[in-house]
Length: 191
Image (cartoon, rainbow, N blue to C red; front, top):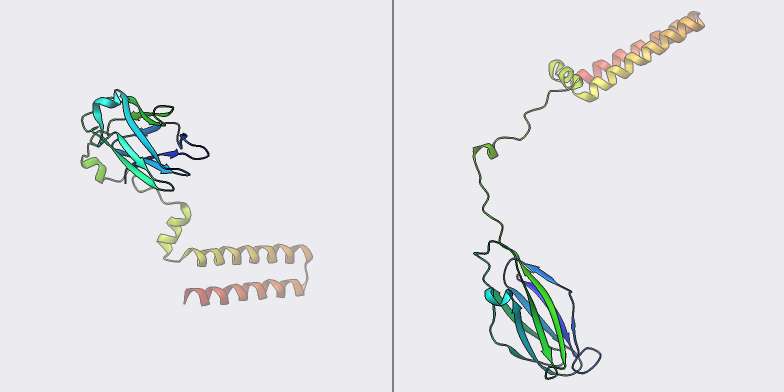
C-alpha cells in the first residue's frame, strides 16, 4: 500500500487547507488524500522542483465533496535514482487564495544484496559447554537430579559439622537420618 499525505480541505473555515504532515520521505509512488470537511471545494495540485522530473499527477484539478475523500495518485518513477530527489507537492484552493506546500524527498531504492555461501554458515560456532553441561552430558543425569544430589551432600555436610560441634549420640543419629533420607531420595530419582 503506498504512503499517503492527507490535506484537510475547508476544515474550520472556507478556502482553508491544512496538511497533516510537515514533509514526506518516500521510495516510490504515494497518494495525496484530500479530506473534505464543511463545504465542497475545487482544488488544484502541482509538483515543483526536481520532483517534477520523476513524478506525475493524472490531472491537476480535483473536486472535493463535503465530508468526502478524494484520492490523488502521485506516480513516482524512482527505479533508476542514484541519489535523493527533493521537491514540493503544492495544493491550492480558493482561486489561489490558499496554498499549502509539502516538501517531498524521494530516496533511491536500496541496492541489491550480495548473498554468498558464507551466509548459510552459522555466525557463531557451537560454544564450549559449561562445567555443569559437561557433567550432565557425561553422567547422563538431568540437571534437576544433579541439583538434588548437590543439596543432599550439603545437607549431610551440615549435619556432620553440627554433630561434631554438639557431640553426643542423638546428634549422630540425626546425621544417620539425613544420610538415609538422602540415599532414599537418590534411589527414587535415578530409577
